[in-house]
Image (tube, rainbow, N blue to C red; front, side, top):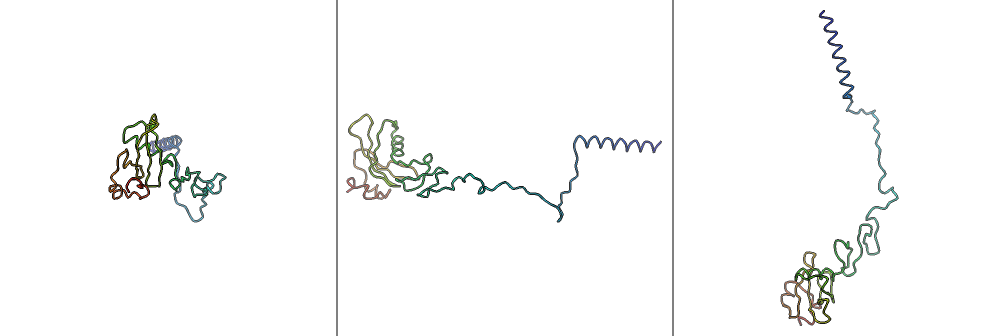
Length: 176
């Protein structure tokens, strides 16, 4: 009788193990590779073998990369992305003047008469006015145009030369 119970126990254990293994799909895998093991590696095609050019792989006559969004800005003498940095200092200076005085940017007319990558000089007037207005001097500080002087009076020429290093040609007729 004891032998029958042992055999019956083995049958139940085997059957239970079988059904559990069917439900959970247990597998024993060899995790080590021998020298003779063959490993297949699939490789996707490299970007250089595709027909599409890589973004930034093209260069125009100025060294700008149009496919990466860069175009030449003559006034700044460099490649820029228009959505990151305006090429036209007039637009940026109009924004700076409007911010400084809480003006509506659509109500002013800004004319840049001289500019380089660091300094600008020009005039600003109300759009509804045919005369009047004032001058401005702006400097680029931390990649942003800042209005250093604006109005009809005389600027502090010592401050302009000492603190901002305005070039003399930008101050001609103002600080002689």
